[in-house]
Length: 193
Image (cartoon, rainbow, N blue to C red; front, side, top):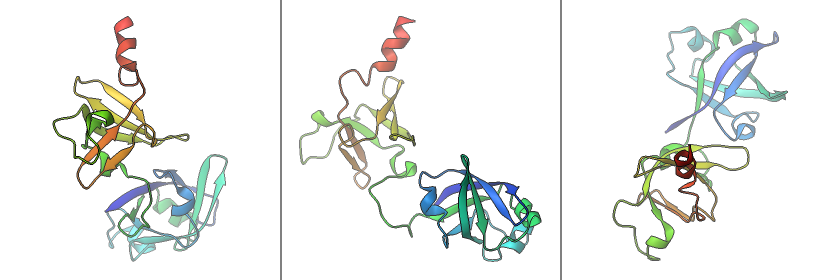
């Protein structure tokens, strides 16, 4: 499966460097020297195809300029080529990536969510649970699991082991053990207004 990593922005300087808008939480891995990224919706008979005939860009160098990542690709040698790549979206093949403890959003969306104390240890959850995962929000301090509860409210659950002790993508469920008040936090505020 192809995972979106970045969108190429404007050229930076005259030697073919580009700025990138990041969609990954590990830019140091994805933009390490020698890493290869695929061009989304690649077509050979386009100006982008002339720059990268194999549909792949190879990272030659990357650096931070304040809060913006600046990247030079081996295939790009001029400002004009860099301009041609503007708005090109870059992906990587998740099946080739080394496995890690993390999860991608597409692994979690639509999984039913159950309360940890409602599921006997060693058994699979039954019934409809308390809600469904609708997203994963990557934050600097910790990720948040976005859950739509069955009474149509949304909850943001800190995606840490103490609160989300089990995720089973094979069987298709998430167990949460939220502290008291976490699931009703937003609803109490809205009732007061």
